[in-house]
Length: 434
Ligand code: XUL
Ligand code: CO
Image 1 (cartoon, protein in one colour):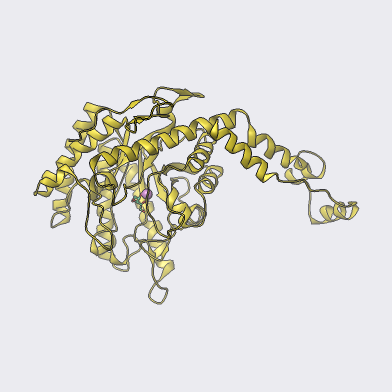
Image 2 (cartoon, rainbow, N blue to C red):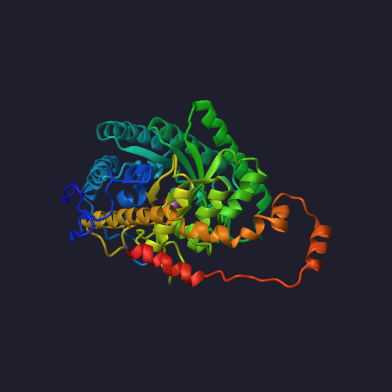
């Protein structure tokens, strides 16, 4: 389906845009191969179903499967293309929403029948190619019935249909051996409090999640549940605003032992955070699950979902991931779309190669930074006042306001030390250029 041949690793000196310069799957970095560290995944929705339309114009993408007219023929051709892409690009995993892989037809029943047909076809391709499902999810936001939300809708019938969709998406994720199941709260948010019962909506959302956990136990689905935070778009106030907000939600509703976080770069930046901030916060709470690898545009205020090519971001992301002991069941999923102007099939290759090389380079730099304990040693020294004396007593919980006050009054002035930010940024540059 694609005129491009198998993409190979040619190494640093290569100028061939259809070759990897850094991603060498079998190369060992630290204790694992690059393939094991990075666990790349292709996003079905952008790469196979994305048309390149925007609010001002129709789709532009040139895709061979668009030559079919029957929606099931299109869906089948997409499966063939998906596996050809994954094989040629050496991408071991993929992710999908139910609605990406099969047409919804005219009823829920027809949709489920179509899903079964495509799932069976996919299963054969997976067996033949060894490709794996990183995660599945349900698209509970595109269909007009979700106008007021899915698990946070004001309409109980819609809530039931949303549950039916998630149940089926979990069934097919299990059938395909999916390693995770994702909840991105597409329309789980609100526009105005003038018509919204926020407490009821959040309680219902939590109830929905608990039912998913119960159903997983019932069918023996052992994948990891993930929540993907996003602060806005499509609704003005998304309930899963960012990692901190989701942690609060999970703890409030006793869900924290069942869920981890799927962190997306462009969602982090929309929330006013860096990707590293979100990964770090999830990591220190034991909740770093997976990554939707993309990037936004510094000058635009919406989710542009561009392919991740910013080396600072990929380096510091890999730094957090290495400190997490890896992604475990998670992966680096390219939730990214080629620009509307990049409409030729070859652009899908250039885009994935650029993203994969950016993360491979980031992995190598992050590994060296950690090996040399560059920031760790500096940071440990920065907090060394907590290793002895009053600092150690604070850490050990041996103080109260009275003893601290007594100690403070005995001090003869204090001495702070420089944080050396610019020096550290310079060192980071040296490691990246090397
Ligand atoms: C939307 C988004 C989704 C989720 C899966 O911004 O990121 O595609 O990743 O529903
Ligand atoms: Co995403």
